[in-house]
Image (cartoon, rainbow, N blue to C red; front, side, top):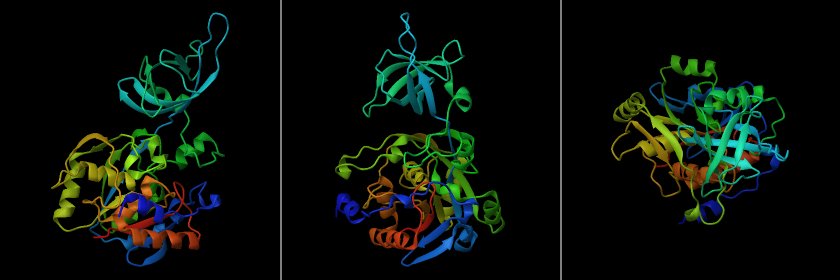
Length: 351
């Protein structure tokens, strides 16, 4: 059984109006489907009744940065130039060197000014290279991260119509526990949590710990062609000694590890050394497809993903193709909302 065959069998037609354009209010009012051998329907705030007091929740605490910035080409002596370029900063490859998508693209040697011209206090960048996927490398004169809150906008997925103000989206498209800046897309399974829900989980004895995976724009890249030929973008992750210890202790004690989001699954599996969770950091291109063993989490909280996506293959690898087909059939029939701002699923790992 190939991953291509699984992806084909999992294909479904998704009406455009089923892609959520705004999250539930309050956040934990979204729907929650529990997927075991049978499918049951709940509201996300019911989560405490679906967990055990000794479960360990693992969250991705990466924070979305205002990575979409308008830039201008410099004006030459003849008065030419000054046109706009849209910059999507992807990640800092080394100090003051960023990978970025540019629209329209610019060649190596070209200069850009972000957030205004030199006279207006803008920030100079030079295109110094091109990556395989068409992204450019931008060299800044100083630490641009310190200025993004002022000059940037929050990047939104291409299937979401912005509508509201950037200030609104900076609150809406961010988890309540986000801490470490670095993502260009939210780890969206965590958007359903509220401070009140986290407090209820604390009261019943559910433990939690945090890892970090900075989500890249590649999370939106659909699979075109063969699954075997699909290239995952590198994403930076980190597991602290405290998180590794908490996860290893839960496993040793027979307690369940609950991954909040596919990015958390990818972090846990990247840091698994074959025997235990290892603290550390690095880049991961891990691609979890049916047939790939998933070692660490026992349960997965995740949103409903788009057809033809790497995430759909990940959840099939985790819960089993038959369960995912049944769950997505029920979601379509029952009016669930899909993707980043939509409803959620709690999946039990197929063993």
